[in-house]
Image (tube, rainbow, N blue to C red):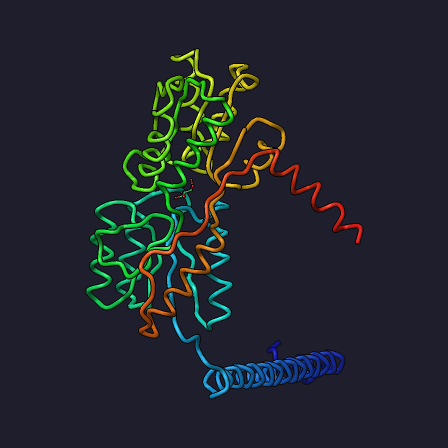
Length: 356
Ligand code: BGC
């Protein structure tokens, strides 16, 4: 029997087939309705999204929203270093006041090659001004390159006086070294065997600090400098160098460190050789870790610099340059000596004020 004959002669089969078709049709309708609703939902969503984007674009291009007046780049030695972050904060503070975008850039760990690459990039991007250290001849060349393209440069922290830079803002590094020397003479009563760890044996600011220090202590008959080593700014190197100096010269009684991390490394080395109690340490910068070591007596004195102020003034100086104002070429920020005793004095001075 053919299939057709079955359809004709078997009623229930026909009903089943019709029921099946109905279900399929309902399913198709439902799918169509769901697809329609989904498509409608998407259309509404995208329409609103495009509207929001349009509104934002209108805001950006509307005459009320203006771009900052200038774009300055601050190239630092180490992005995460507390000292440089303070310089960055000062620069950004001034940037806010004067409507300037201050871009804070630099390598994660001290790396002059990377700094120079960033410097070159800033020149190519034709920023309005560049704030940077003058660390060596390569920096001098790059400063001159920027200035020849009419991008003014302000050196910060380390000067490059032989370059074409417009101005320098930072410590008088020779004088700061002298201050360290005088403090050591006073605190050791002019009797010491000294080891020195310097951030670098090439960078001008460390050399100036070293010279200032030597010029003072070498006038003292009973002070002898027996070793000078370089830390390349890293903590690990300082500790290793200090450890080597201490084992080679067991008679050392004092250390001078010319940059921020030197004191920390010297103290660790002295601790590991159980020399901390008979060791006088003087180092640079009031970063938090140094202040802790000063408070607990592991560091005898700190040469304080003013990084926040350096950052702030460098932006102000650049604004003056933008406005064609004749300004001072060199601005020295303060340096001073901080001892535990000066902290004690400050603390006792704070108490009566608190009570008022
Ligand atoms: C120096 C900076 C240096 C920093 C970190 C400071 O004393 O002035 O040039 O980057 O120490 O070691």
